[in-house]
Length: 299
Image 1 (cartoon, rainbow, N blue to C red):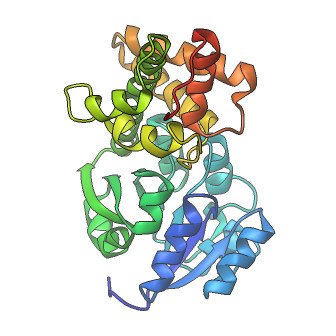
Image 2: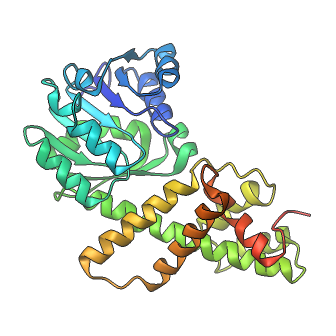
């Protein structure tokens, strides 16, 4: 694919989709976009994108179509529902950047049988989407992957073809997010414990970040979002909860044991049930602070 002037369809202009569209436009590509949020569409148009009235209209005009959507049900509806991508005649490659799980990826692939289908979930958060440093875990047709690799490398520094099987990229993304979610739950619990014992959370963070307990949670979540109480990593708590549920569902279908991760899911269940909906994933620590009677804030 030419490095310049590709016509790309993009459906889903949310927290992740919008910065990816901006990067693709900045790389010289023509973007045909659609979203149910008119304000998000207007912002993309202001950057140079062309608004399309439906997902079907996008697929009727663009040979390559990306989607970046919040839930598996929305992905299925956009791809296969009335007015969906399946009704377009120009689309030859479909790539799903969302986190949907392997089963939905396979259902969509079956419904879009006439096109090359890739599931290509991304990791790295909103900051990574803006900087173009995402990890992209693509699976499906290898030739289609090589065709759109230059586009994926605009949004992702670490772009990998996981395998030919549709859904393998989704499974790898769920493995990644399940690890991240479980480690974050354990990190938050442990930091509240240390704060309750009277240790300055900033001191704890400085030590753990250079010791064997370091992780993405201590290096990225903790410094600003928690210690400075901004809670603004950019990934909603209910989306992490969704990914954990999807991962455990996949694990059950595969027959693997997930005792630790199932316990972590229960904590996310509690957080959502106690006012966490709509909050940043880093706000999980607030529930644990309330239970533990200590605050993980820099002194």
